[in-house]
Each structure stands twice: as structure tokens, then as C-alpha cells.
Image (cartoon, rainbow, N blue to C red; front, side, top):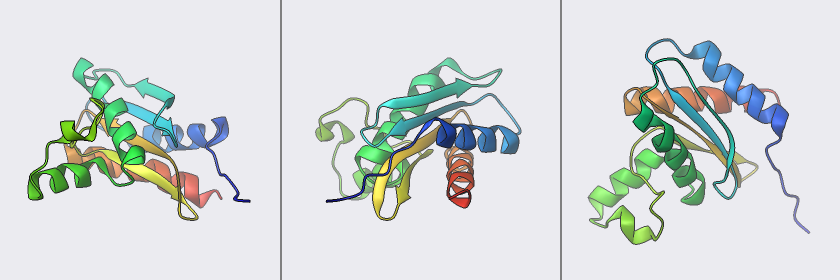
Length: 136
């Protein structure tokens, strides 16, 4: 029998709090999803562009479903010349900022940020995950 780790409410709070504490700058959207890519938590800060709302959710979905950062999927799509739409779900995106949460080799969810540069978005998502994993 395998042990299944899942994100709970406390875990999501740790992630969100870490991102809020670290964030300085323009408005952002933050999404945390479970192992299936379904939304557990979402918030946006003042000044968040409306487009970032759905993009953050799509980045998180992509990261956990494809088991890699959303930026990596975008890079692979360009390098191997396949369309992201070929993956069969319109929620997949190649924009950077979505990062999977991996615990003991299991993909238990993902965090994504949208609203800044892709590199800044990804760095904030990683900060949230580091805070979660530091508490374990």
C-alpha cells in the first residue's frame, strides 16, 4: 500500500503567507492546486492585472499535471516543436511561474504566480514551496 500525501489548509496558508511576506512590487495572482490540478487556494493583490487571474491558475494546473515547471513545458514545446494544445486541455500553458510541489517523489500539488516577469513569478512560487517544505 502506498502512502498518499496531500496538501491541507494549513499547508496552503504557509505557502500563501510566505509569498505575501516576500512579495514587493506590482499586483500578482497566486494559485495553489492539489495533485489533480484543482484549485485549493487563490488570491490576488491590489493592482493585479485581470489576465493574471486565469493565467496563475493555468500555470499551477500545468506544473502538477505535467510534473515540471510551466516554463519547462514551454521551453520543451519550442525545442521539440509541439503545440501545447496537443496536450488535450486548454488549461496547459508554457508561461513561466508554475512550480510543482514534490514530497518524497510524489507530486502533491503546485503553486503559481502571475503578474510580474516569468522569472519573478517562478521565484515567488518557489519561495512559497520552500517555506512549506522547511516546516516539515
